[in-house]
Image (tube, rainbow, N blue to C red; front, side, top):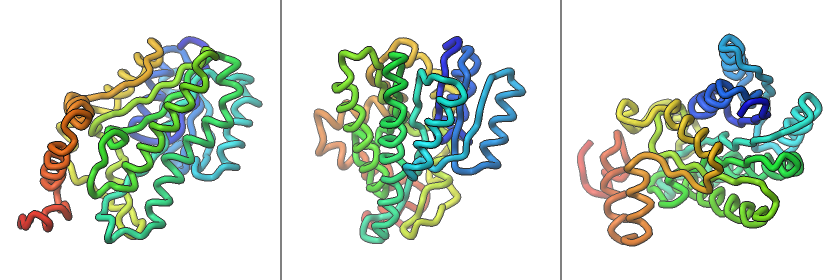
Length: 275
């Protein structure tokens, strides 16, 4: 990664922040972006204190003009772009019957269209560098998860988009990686939207038993170095993807029962389970 220019979206916390440190320690120059200027500045300061060359820009990836300006300013400052990591994302938790469709639209705009905008405007420079495009997707992009229908839809869309782009670029020397963490300890669940688009502010899962964001970032770094096509993390994630391919009806039941055990899960009511 020495002397590479790496752009990471959604880098103010969680996996994005961990990726900035992982690639930065390998000698890369890191451009980070996020919507929250204060949190972004804090990460930028931490990176500099660690001796990592960094540049931060506030941007909302769901806004096309923001993303175009992000890429333009990166190129104006550094003259190149070697690796784009589409990490910015948001989740949601509510039963579809209760959900305002505008919530799903917002999730799609950030998770999917944000990836589309960044990849499209970065592509000429990535092609010139024969570099890498990375999408931080999810196991929810392989297996639809109840109470997260909009999130699953956005990640299925991301996976299909990246697969199509990878095939388009097959003979260009550009590397495209779809990285799918399982349940990873990060801030995305704490900022998940409820049925009305408000951040829930709490996790439904036990964060202590999950893969850390730092471990996740190290796996992604290695996958970029070796130019892997796909990365599925955690034994639970690999099991879910494998079994869903061969025994999808069984997985309907297994996934339902597993997620019904989450704290305050609305699926409990369907099962008649008392909280």
